[in-house]
Length: 404
Image (cartoon, rainbow, N blue to C red):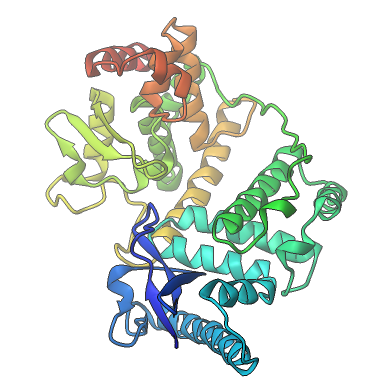
């Protein structure tokens, strides 16, 4: 007798705490499992119904889960049909026979459906920036090859070369093409890991993804002093953009996203404690007098849950969208400021971060100290050879750089 049961594979948790959903095959004391492409957290699983809980999350997410349950049920029905066909043949068979027959008949999963699953999963855990990366790549892919049912088997070396030439024909920059190709490669690698794509069909083996060195985006200390001394009392929007730029510079090139989500509760004594939005790395920085002045300009420091800067104006309401809008507005106004002072390059929030690093380098501060000061956790070689620096070393480096 053969039994089939949909269940969570709790022996194979993902780093984000989700578990894959599998169909357990029990036949003649043999047990095998068909691992499906869906993953959920344990609290989102309805153990009584052996399905994803359709009562969890927003109305859109509940509809998404209903659709996933229907697709899981269709896979269960496919297995039931395979078992029925084998039984009607009146020959003995094993759990492996069921599994092999299922895999042979497995249709290629649509690439876009798989990407949509990734995007939904990333949104669910708050990784909206990463979700946007996959979503944007999908949109570009659809413009090149407007077929919703594209399969991983169809993405071969020729497909990739044609996609690359299509982007070149659209005069897309080399590094942007590299970005799309690397994202697509990441999707394919993930699909192999999830058993959706075949490893032997991997199309990136002989694919060289070109990348150009980016133009350095940094200005000199004298130019930052000019930006600081500029009279912007006539326009509060320009004044705010300049202050965010300077705060980033004063705080070791703090990224704009980290600044946006800073709360009063992040301040403890004369230091600012926070986790980088991009990497979750925990940092703490001494607040210089200049940084304190900017904080007090925008916050009375009364409510620990209140954002320090007026960039998220409706807390709890689509904050990622508010962050994106603030990012565009601040950079638009910074470009106007750059034109006013004649920096010779578009002024952006990233220029503040890069300028801190460049000025630190010119001041003789070791690259390893600069790397730690910026909160880079990808400087693997530096971290292997050097221990973490004491805060006093980083604070001293910051005092040297921001002394303008």
